[in-house]
Amino acid sequence: MRSLIDILDFSVEELQELIDTANDIIAHPEKYSERCRGKKLATLFFEPSTRTRLSFEAAMYELGGNVIGFSEARSSSAAKGESVADTARVISCYADIIAMRHPKEGAPLVAAMNASIPVINAGDGGHNHPTQTLADLLTIYREKGRFEHLTVGFCGDLKFGRTVHSLICALSRYEDIRVVLISPEELKLPSYVKKDVLAANHIPYVQTTDLESVMPDLDILYMTRVQRERFFNEEDYLRLKDSYILTPERLWNAKADLSILHPLPRVNEISVAIDDDPRACYFKQVLYGKYMRMALILKLLQEAGRL
Image (cartoon, helix red, strand yellow):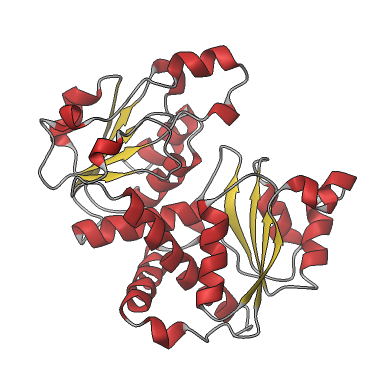
């Protein structure tokens, strides 16, 4: 049974197929309004979410389908001790496809190994967030028209940022990509990502703590928040949370066609004064995420023989 657990589960050609479908949905939404009529998406969210959960729900409704599920672990039988494997087997009796978010790395993979329907990883701990990467890729494609020949800066929490890890994996398969890693020492990109993804794919990268010094080089700036929920103590979080705050003044030497992305939620790492800057793309990302999830649901249901 085909699922999406890691962005590398899909080939470059399949990612382009999803982008093409999403662009067609944007251009011709009426063609897709009944494609999932009679189908059910189960949203199993063991961890809080606003955008991802509602985006999946909106995607399924706009395809003419229905949604069942829960939005926190205590609303499920996990509160009684039910395993992820058993939950996946049970939900397979009720739905056609699952979107799961879980605080433990690997939980959606366990679900996919035990479900008889497709499973989509909607975020597992600090590990992976492939559908956010799909939103990021569509945003980049619509802004730049390509994935090759780009310098991409990742700024903020690169240690726990699962969206960063997933996007770096996705971009590593395209030609002439350069990566700039901007973070405090304590929140640097994990060494396994540098070794297994960047070095293994011969992607040139630099690490710095100084955003302004590298700003002129960037085609894309991917901002992230410092995630309070990933810290073991409040002291470290408070010390690092305001490490990078993007203001109009800090864009003085940026390219005129820079694209500023952020997976959201934003706390204070991007000033609201930037929201009206034509280079700000983060609210577009939210909308594009819905279209890419629509394309993904269609692809997985078709491959499962359920459409």
